[in-house]
Image 1 (tube, rainbow, N blue to C red):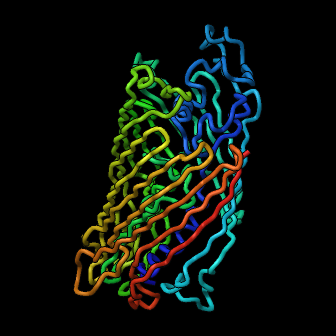
Image 2 (image 1 turned 180 degrees about the vertical axis):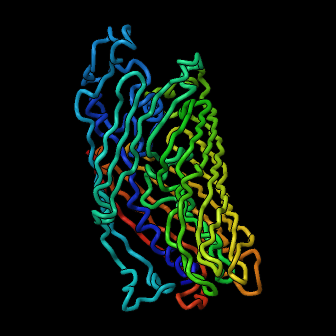
Image 3 (image 1 turned 90 degrees about the vertical axis):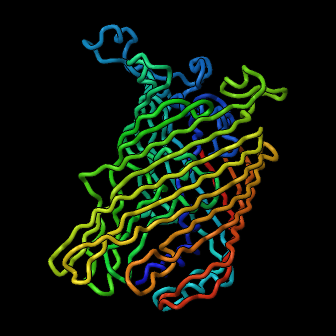
Length: 497
């Protein structure tokens, strides 16, 4: 089946998958400290400056934590054991109450009348309904710290989209904070995280407060010329968590922040069959190769008052508030996809390096936040030669795009959103005949106004309307579908406990 047929269809249904992302707020911390969710969140799960500092400190108040905690931790050993180490077990703590939280959400969606034009209904595929109640996810999560700067996080989705089988582990890790002190480094200059975790992206897709995900984070990369395989069939996307180890340092609420990660290679998926050769065996992760990810950002706090500029939160006549700031960052990901194909001479293996890179910007003035991200992705491509007994280099598959979003907290419980997503991918149009060449590019745009309001600090209602400018595509028979719009309205309700 031709790749662009699926690309066109995914444009219509991507939000159904995106709205089930595993974003979390942490009500257990509200119970532990006897405070509201709004202490750390401006519109859960969107963190304010204090929430960012709380996370940076290992899920502790960044200053004088012991003075604010209402449920003291349980000591696992006497403090004197620190002096006896290594002849005694080094003492730690566990939270004084179980740090368990729950989350549930549900959605109602209305699609445009031409929603099935790209893929008309058939006996095997009933198509997309005009209106749809869409169950979201039910998840359980826990987080906290074990003392001495050791933080933990685990979240498990029991069901996603109403399906128990679609659930699974989101994040599960230990993070050792400020281990740089052992090397006499500046405070918070070096942390260590181990386990499964979301890659340290500029804006978290796993904890997005939007109903639908940012399109660029779900972009995979595909590109095969004239039906010759394997070509590029890389299912990697930033929206999936990684497994590995990460070092990081600095702060997200001011000054520098960096992270460097070594991760399992993760591009597994199903390969498409070729038109001219025998079917591909499949796509595999390369267990002997680890992906690399790096990120750096710097945030300039722009408050006039020096004390406010350097403190965790800015001060004002009405109390603490987020800094006025300008944040600039960049990131780079390097990996290698492995694809095996059956040719005339047996099974051949193509190892195709790829990278994703880009930059980000965020500007905040009190309750107004304007931020955006740009990404460029490129995959080296190899295909079978005409005789089917070897691999040759083909033009690289690439994509680019990003998003720009403006959030305005009109009232403490009401936030309005305006967002623009854009993805330009060489895989979105069919390759033509005549040998190898750079595939034609296609552009997908989306404009999404929205509004969210808190019924309580832990209950939120949301609405967004997705406007997709005219776009062309191909049906399942490879025929061009005339340019058209397919808009969509989504309403959501969620609670955390």
